[in-house]
Image 1 (cartoon, rainbow over the protein chains, first blue to last red):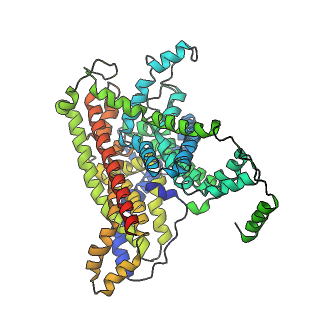
Image 2 (image 1 turned 90 degrees about the vertical axis):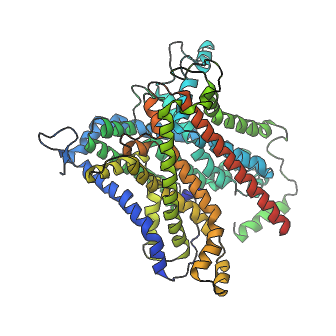
Length: 303
Length: 290
């Protein structure tokens, strides 16, 4: 599946060098397409990010320039949103990892004896993908609204302040991000844990290691490639998301993330240079974080 | 594990005849906690789906938030809400065209990547990897900036262009996994039997690749059908199903949207389950033969 994209280095076959003309014909259309609709857009995003308004022009009219102040403006104006995006995304990634690891461990290791159960559980993990992302999020908004059983119940049990809200808060946005990206975390974890050699765990026990020690010294290192893929697959979309934080969804007045700012600048206020410079900042920060993270976790063959 | 380490381990086993006791008792906390947690985790994942499904039967008038009683009306008259059906139709058209194009382009690339050697291989791999690692909002804004500077009017066509772009990489990854499991000897045999390259491809390679291609196409369609972020930047005034939900979120989603989402969900689950069952049966048959 798609998650293999981040999986450990696939063994490249020793394909014979033959008929490179055929290879060219096979590659050319797709590569040209990606060049035209992926690379050129990135370049035009960079160009747009340096544009300046046309003097006496209409709203949304810009000319090519080298106005690097667009970047400093974006950072000083939206610094809060930038920090918030990464803060929310990091928390959601941690929660998704904590939620998914035991689940993936059960499906991949404990349920091995029952392939049917394993497959059924996997289908249930990906089931949320089959229902609209937006409707899922709106469903949570209703389930956790102030009038809902969950929240009134929590308030009756005095676990929540009587005048507190859940929807519209930072916790709700982080909750939504966590929920929506859990399958992206669970599947790669499952894929590596499924191949885990359980004899190694027995060896740990035989060598007098407590289960916790065996877990942290054997299981976790062996599933590192799954953890890295899961973290990337969760963190990247979570950092750029603008559904969960939207006001009509789980967010409120103080929860806007970078995605929300990029959207409103691009589509509402038609401030393309601001939206473009924010996009470039988002992509640059994500690239730096991904490279540092992958290097530190020692799975460089991933990229 | 090196040989030495293995020897050390073996020695440890012989010099210590008493096997250490298992860390936990057989019916202790650990043995049932994990299954129970996993079950609860799956229930948690399914809560919003159950909610969406239940509220497709709500006898709602305007907004579909308060439960007003059970009805089949919304299922029977989905298209009474014409905008919902129109948006759904657009999503289907976009999904089908984008899937066909992305599957063809991606399959060609996957075959080339596994079967042929060429220069700039790592550059091409990077080009295929990057769209999957780029936040959707950047992909959407970039493409919209390109359309803006080229003066292209946004609409159905620009949405399709965008969807093909982000589906291609996923198709390549999925089909590539299948191509690399193919035994080249089968094609070799076809050539030895004087099959023309065309015959070898269509009679041997393609049928063997088909399960991978179908999986890739289904994945593309699912990605395209549910995409909102990239679509929103490149749609202009055209509505897709997710975009319709986004716009009407402020004033309340009609139950008809729940009906369509639930129907799509049921269809997808049935498709996945049948493919799982049929592949399980195929495996069993192969076991019996082998």
